[in-house]
Length: 162
Figure 1 (cartoon, one colour):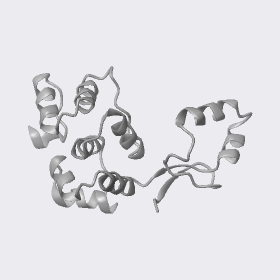
Figure 2: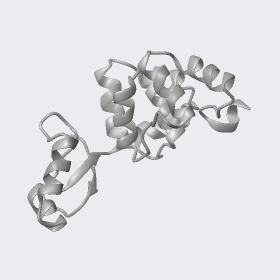
Figure 3: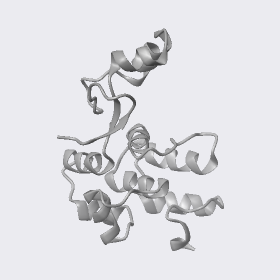
Figure 4: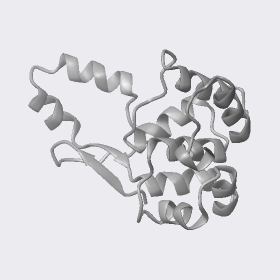
């Protein structure tokens, strides 16, 4: 069972899965509603899964081991396990590193960022454009770091790479 993070008035619980309406459908419902309260009462809680549960789900779906994801993401081991256990929350950079560690594509990374409640990648932001291109093309984290460095852009993970 996936724990959820609540967004809105308590009514029903919707986790992110195939049985829920798409974001596009939710936008359409919201803008057709006569009031925001009407939308909330008709659609129940708008929720996202707990980040750690979603991370475990992605790892299991890919038949990966936590330690291999943490290593591929170049995240300190104990911190990585705290992310999986839900005792720590990721930064945007850590979320992106995990996306590389999990081998996510750009769309899957956007979903991971959403669950982490972080801003999505945007093609008008140079650093984001590099990262999105690398994710889309299945490049590993080290490749993305090199492209960021070559273009004078901040590396993922901050000062650890300085």
